[in-house]
Length: 325
Image 1 (cartoon, rainbow, N blue to C red):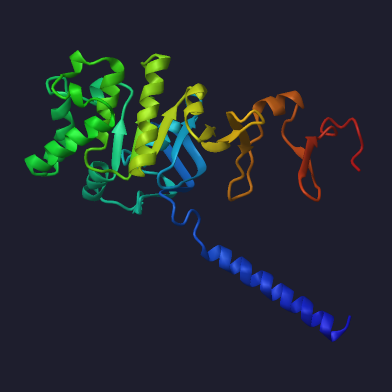
Image 2: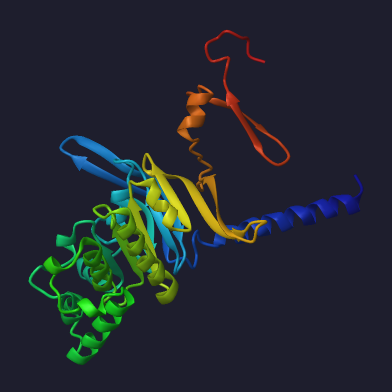
């Protein structure tokens, strides 16, 4: 090998090393509104330990409208509680709107819940006080923050107009339909101008038409107010209302479905949906259960690196019916 060739290889190696060092210095999820990095949550019940989140990664940008789906026990409710400041992670990193959720004292956590996060729950009794009108319910969070009467009245009316219920401002919850109650609940959640709106099964008790109306309001919140909206649900059909769906399985993000609208050959708009498996920072990948079942994958698999993809197939020698090659 000539000196020039050796020098060139040394330069290339140095360049690659510098690039790798630069990548390491860029923190995971830098600039995002929500960042969960290797998030772990362990519940201790008597002598038992239940691992609800097992190294979950998630990045959500400002103004994004996403759905988080998963079966019961998948960890989605635990994630919602952590993002909402109602629970504390056991390990990892969780940052929302610049707030480090692992390193807040009780006072900071209360301020975070009141000023940074807005909640919409499935049960309307958790969203609205039955003896207050729609206007008064929207004003209440601002009263707790000490907002002047004129400012809070104007803000409440503005939000009721946003959700299409300005004409129902003087009605109490028992005079409103289920969909109207949830739309008022969205206005209440936005009262203190939060950076993030969290919705837990917001349409779980509504019919299809009313659910579509509520999701239309949530979409407007994300697009018009640049508020990050995260909807948590067990219903995969709800995810069709958003541009990105994140599926959680066994305490980790397992897949993401991205949706976009484009024109077809007839000039009509059509929705294109693509599902991707999530590769976390440790290189872990959850294969879809139907793939695992179809190929009878278990314990271990064979991998082969191709020029532009990785092949995965069963280890047929696991039963000892063939000699290892």
